[in-house]
Image (spheres, one colour):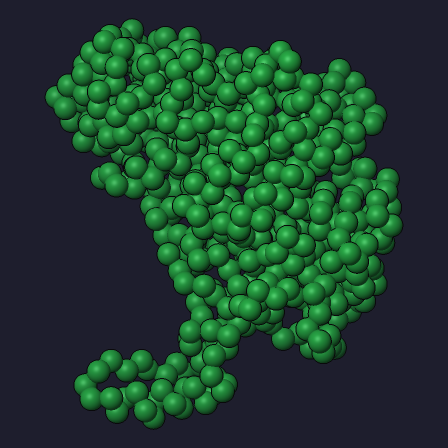
Length: 574
């Protein structure tokens, strides 16, 4: 947990040198109390600000090899950046997008929204899919324990449906993709503690490109941005923002990451939109902002960007403030071998099956919580357990049981009730499990005693926990932790399977304070003009837990706000 970071706390005092002299000359004279030693080479991070923040780099004018003029500059061509580019271009602006990578990476495809055309068309057949905005907004606030801006949450609720309609028209323009509404809310006859909302939308390939692995959602919307006149510059790394005398952002300093790595100045007369993706790969920021999530994190190889907090730091250097609490989107989709524990630095494997609410035990062989609910509830409970690691246990009936669980969102392994495709089918997941068995992660056994031994669990306690769980399943009631009856099923048919599980880390969710015009705000709540933030650079929307039962909420928020930022920058409305 960290206190708010602001430019005032960052540069507090009459200058670093003066502050160093002050601490050396006065604090050491305060009786026998603690006196901080003056750093040999003081930096702003040594006085009131976190060390990861540092100071904006000083770039010599002689090192700037190129100047580019545009109207709207989008930094980061991903989930938020590409919609921002499209929106700005559609509203008549000259648009340039830059990204330090060579292609768009990990553009998300589960898009959360309320009142899209696709949703509304389903209500006659599936009235349970209808969403009351008030209920959804209040549930998001509940997940965050109130650490949110109501106005931002309501903005998503009010504008996300139109955003999805807009995206639907874009991706269906050439017959290559179709948008599907992921209609599902779970078993309403046996509701659990947490309500699911049918918010998810997902682009799917048509037969026209079914076999084309080079074409997908990211390629479609990026191509449309180009059709609208937006330009791109890849392998171009953002360094910092530039401002005029009034403090308005006028452009950025960037750097080519190939060849001789020259610096360039990009002037953006109408605005700069930062969408650089949070700070998940900045370990210093992670340890400072959310050390608890590092304890359950397993590094699972996968594709994606390399978010280092560059956009967040750039806004803070200009005087912006940041959310008071670190937060992340963590899924229980990573595993380690039986002699390993979860934790930062541990290399494990992708385990998509981990979100299914089977029996889960700690490393003492004890059940410790309700396995059914938001993904990170399970993980947060795990933080309270030995070595922040738990074990998933299932049996030969796992496919039928997974279907009966009636999950929603991206962990669903079977088509949705309205016929929409799920992300990954059960057959593919079974193949993943077999590979994990071959590689020594998932263990397989004919008895629970043997499985416990293979997982390095106490045999007697593990077997007792398993038998008690099956007894409750037979009775139809979880008297320990109150799991829903339809997700409380006996694990009694060999072979038995088990694996040590922890958190797969999707993204950081805390960010810079913004207003509803997407401007970062200073400590007085005043906007920093000329600058807009979207995606995981921005804050005010999530905290404590990610509301994954509103499928695609993070992506929907990012795309809704990216679209809005592009429009506002291009038109000058705010």
